[in-house]
Image (cartoon, rainbow, N blue to C red):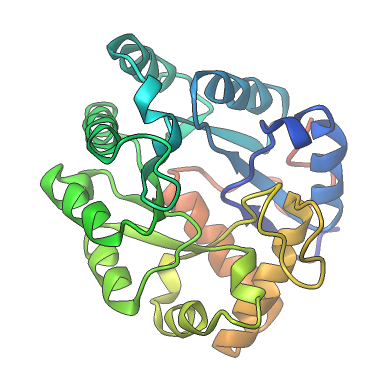
Length: 272
């Protein structure tokens, strides 16, 4: 019997570093209680592979979308296809999408155009969006407001903003997700935000294969490590690990409009 259930809301099982070993990785995750994983897309190939992985494993769900790094290569045809991918029954949102002003791999005006176009698609298909935000806090909030993203809401992936930004996102029907950096010694701002957020808006993730939490920082990340993020969240909020697992699992199911698995507690469930 599983003693707790965990939901990794953002794991790149479709990344070349993990995809060839996906079966072993999801079994290791299940062995420590991670029964559900959301795999985000970031371009055409990764979005289609996310769907393929979701078809293969019952506890895996897909996001489809175009990352700001790849915005310069996105065509109108890609956006048409994106909308069609959203009809798949294992696609639970559009992501990861957003803005990245750290690397600027795509010009900022193109990033913004592609980001806004994908928000518009999300509203048409009534799916939540998962946001990548790096050094673009103000423009992210402005775009979400302008495109009425509150109609679908979504997830602020690997949140690194301020308490004030978190409040603006909450008001637009977004959940706040924390990953491995929450466990780092220099994570004072994220810890302060995680401590004060409403319990019904908290999520956890790995962003595997990156951002590995302590005590394995520096090694390749995978979904099984989300338990360390859950433990840190529990410590921050002065609750038990079981309570942190339960609230983030329930929140994730609600964020992605998923029903709770009826066979909860059965150690065989989650992955075929």
